[in-house]
Structure formats: C-alpha cells, structure tokens
Image (cartoon, rainbow, N blue to C red):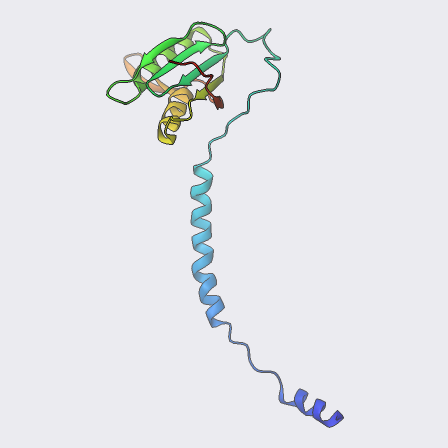
Length: 164
C-alpha cells in the first residue's frame, strides 16, 4: 500500500495548461479598463432633497425649482408663481429655459442649487437634457458666447400633482 502512494508521487502531476486562461486575460483586462473609463465619464452627481424643509433659508434667497411636465416646463422659486415655458411641436423649449436660468443666475450669482421635479410620463432623454440645461448655460460676454456654470447642484424628485 505504501509503495503505491510513493509510485504516484514519483511520476509527478499532470502539467497544467494555462494558455487559454492567459488568452482570456489578454482580452478581458483591456476591455475592463476601457469600460471603466466610460462609466466614470457617464456619472452625474445629484443631491437628494433634505428631509423636513429648508434648513439654510436664512442665507439663501432663491430656492429654484424646475418642474418638467408632459407639455411644458415651469420655473419657480419654491412656493412662488411659476414661469411657464410651453413645449413646441412636442419638444421642450430648452433655449428659453436656458435664458431664464441665465437671468436668474445673474440675479443670484452665489446660488448653486436647483431642484428638478418630473412627472412620471417624462422621457429619460428629456430629463437629462433639462438637467444639462440647468447645470450649464451660454452667456454672451463681450459679443462672444461663453459656456458658464449655472446651477450645478441638482436635486431630483417627483412633480406635484395638479399641473394641468
């Protein structure tokens, strides 16, 4: 019995062929590195609305809310009457929204927060376009259009009912 065990050790184990595994790693590692870069670029940072109301109301003078409804956009200070920007031919008027937001930014240059409220029927692409318009805008300085940051700290939520 002991001789059988010794004989098995003397022969040595079968060689392990790792060529297929190395081929997989040569393909997989660059693929993962490339997709990791793209997923990093595609991340959009959002902030969640605070629970229980506005804690910093004393130092902030504007609480910007952009409500995206199925047929229009509404821009308002929280609790105030909204400025309605109707959609044209089924598309949101993002140029007018950008102009309104640029004017608000000129009035409140220190404000960086905005809340985007969405109805359930609003397409994802429209939500991203509105958020991009809220985040960045074009301002004309010395007869040259310049891209500027408007309200980069965006919170999102559900639009209140009764928009019709």
